[in-house]
Image 1: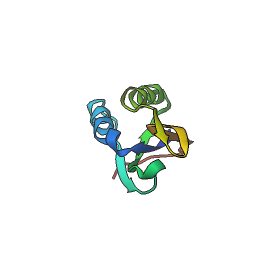
Image 2 (image 1 turned 90 degrees about the vertical axis):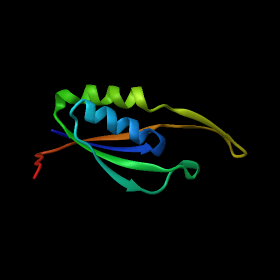
Image 3 (image 1 turned 180 degrees about the horizontal axis):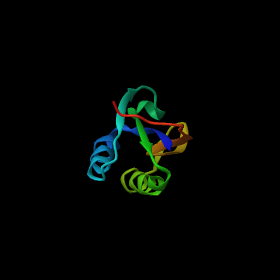
Image 4 (image 1 turned 90 degrees about the horizontal axis):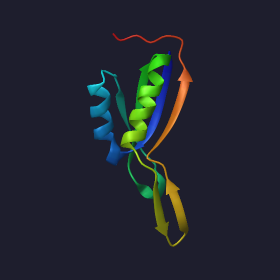
Length: 94
C-alpha cells in the first residue's frame, strides 16, 4: 500500500476531488497554509494500492498544470501539485 501526500493549488482542488470520487478513489482534504506568492493550497491524503498509482498520477497530470509567473523578482515556474508517495504498512477505514 502507498500513502500519497499532495500539496495542491486551491484552484485545482474541487476538480481533483471530483475526479477521484468518480474513479472511486477516497481522498481526504486538509486545509494548509503557505504557498508561493501567497497563493492558497490544500493538502490531499490518499491511500492506495500499488497498481492504482499510475491512474492517480494521470489524474493529477490531467487536472493540475505548471504555470509561469512573472514578477519584479524574476520569472518562476509554479507546479500545480507537489506529490509525495510513501510506503504504507496498513490502512483501515473505520
